[in-house]
Image (cartoon, rainbow, N blue to C red; front, side):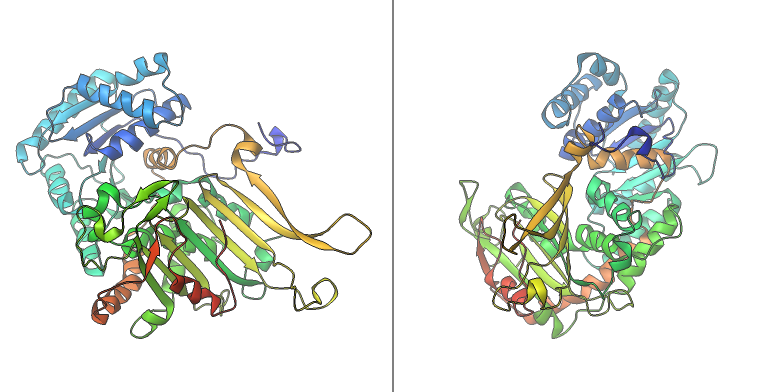
Length: 513
């Protein structure tokens, strides 16, 4: 239910209606963790929400020799363990009839003929039109074989036809600018840009989507959302877990590639973008990419000035021992892969001139938390801020992305009593308390958008390449530095002391989450 004071009549839908079309979701890597933990539970919850078309199907693809019944059992366990809602027996009995599995290797051309034959039978049996969504939950080096195999088997329809073919691409899209261009070219040779949905699950989170609403639907914020009133912005994405079983992947990635290039830069775009003139997908995406084009380059000597990277050492996270990164299985003993990165950047445009943005992310930190915090400038040092030894706390708008989505606004209030004492207080909002129930998972919203053909929350080719164009000189600077030992931080802490110095040199401090 809406929060007290918010009537049902005041809950206004200003977005374009999502009308998901009947289709089949074809998951490459259908026997993998992503399908089991995220994708199938997301489709199941869309069914419970009654927004999924009645004539739909899910076809998992993989090398493992599974029957449909095997796949359904895996999906059932995945829903029991990872769905935000408990398994409902009646709903499951209806849902499982739409789940299928096809065994095969994508490097064998016959696999795609088998896929085509299987799809035609499933669609005929369930009355599903030949609308297909191909989800590439596979390593990037397999994208070319998958896309070319689909094209050779006649499974890719031209855009704007009677039925649709769409492809969803998981990160990482490359490891630098050149490799990103190559992957985009491979996919672009088979699918038109309007058919390609590059997914970033952060953009499907409620608080991230709410950033635009907070800014552009509230007259108290937009007039002061600029360098005249904002002192700085902090974006934090901290993870409590170490690399664990992902060590082999992480060794070739690191925090900058894994988190900053996609998730954090996309958050930055939503915080800093200009108001779009409509909610049409490309209008919104044009506004986001303009932010990337305004990023002041960090290259050469500036890499060391504005960047800090680190590795976690042995420590405890939630009372559990975490080995140092270089002692994780699959990590080279002399690795210089960063598990933590902090940076200061600037946007060279009129709105944000001179405003620093401080970004940080890391593994094996104190807690799992993601937040965007906008700190406003101090009030003049008179009246209630006249004591330089005890300055007033600044106003801060903090948008919490995880674990509990919501926002808070810090204001200064008078302490009750006869003295003119003041104290900072937090005005808090959470989705659960305000609207009741759990927010949909990010993949639920994003899959629904793909079914409806709405690309607003997905990255366009030029945005991917623009972010890599900014990131790549930093990677080159690190490589050329020849550093063989990174600053260290204890597992369970908030990062290396060098990161504290980065922001404290400017007279500011990292927020305590």
